[in-house]
Length: 87
Image (cartoon, rainbow, N blue to C red; front, top):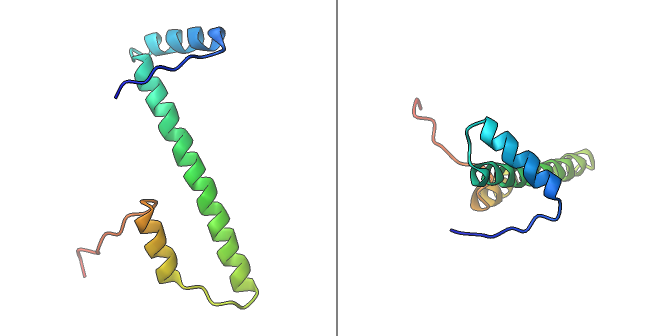
């Protein structure tokens, strides 16, 4: 897929271009990696919020439906279920 991005900060673009060249990488690969890491960090932040909510619910004595929580996380692609092959 082709996407055109107009950066406002020309110095940032030059710095990325130089760093990518020094690493023997294309700018598109660096941008793709940065976007992937950004998404991962947002998912991690969301997981922390959900975990905190679950802990607070537990502290209030409320039950937590772990199966429903994990099913939702699997459906959202945030975790993968893999059966234990040794069992």
